[in-house]
Amino acid sequence: MSESDITLYRLQACPFCERVVRKLHEYGLDYQSRFVEPMHSDRDVVKRLSGKRTVPAIVDENTGVTMSESANIVAYLERTYGEGEETAGGVA
Image (cartoon, one colour):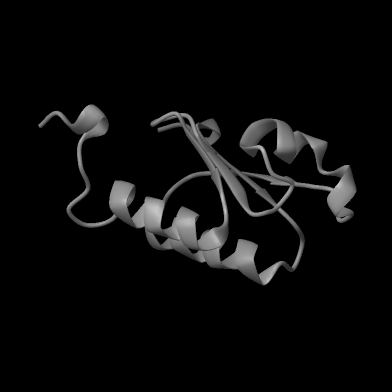
């Protein structure tokens, strides 16, 4: 996996974003941080990707997944990269 496979859209000092960062570090996943505009109305790049302007948002090129909301992202990372991870495409 290259560094550009996972991109995290986040805000500086955002506790929800930091929750996702901790999970990425826990699994030793390389990712690229993209810091977004603090003003909610200026986050057009995030809206284009996920349909919402909320952060954190993640794009995982490995699986084609784009999502927002920290709880959803953490659950996705656990399912995809945690112990007992499934192989890509669900094929063993």
